[in-house]
Amino acid sequence: MARTKTKSNPYQAQIEALRKKQNELLDSYERDKAAGNAQPDDGIQDLADKAASAYSKELNFSLSDTERNLLMLIEDALTRTTEGSYGKCTNCGNTIGEKRLQAVPWTPYCIDCQELQEKGLLA
Image 1 (cartoon, rainbow, N blue to C red):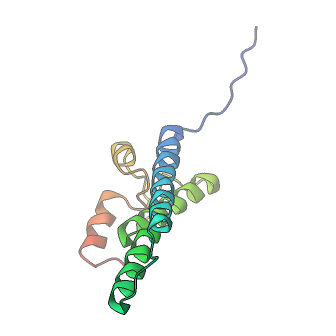
Image 2: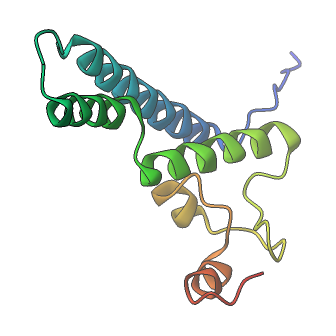
């Protein structure tokens, strides 16, 4: 009896982790947005209070820079999974270690290039 083999993606666990983290960030944004919309500004007469209220709402509506950057890294990593380049360093092309991908599935760099990037030596 012949067995048919379906080609499974070796990075399926990382893809699932990427999607889970992406959903967590987007859900957090939606909750913050809803909380911001729920803040009443009725009856605020003082201009400074109105400004503070508007600023508070704006903070609730926006993702932090860290969250925004992480979301972009996740989206880039998911794009690389469909292009077939996931698991390869976007700088040097070397294979990114399996343990690194498990720990940081959105990383675009191998450990050596990550160190260069942190030192500001990566173009």
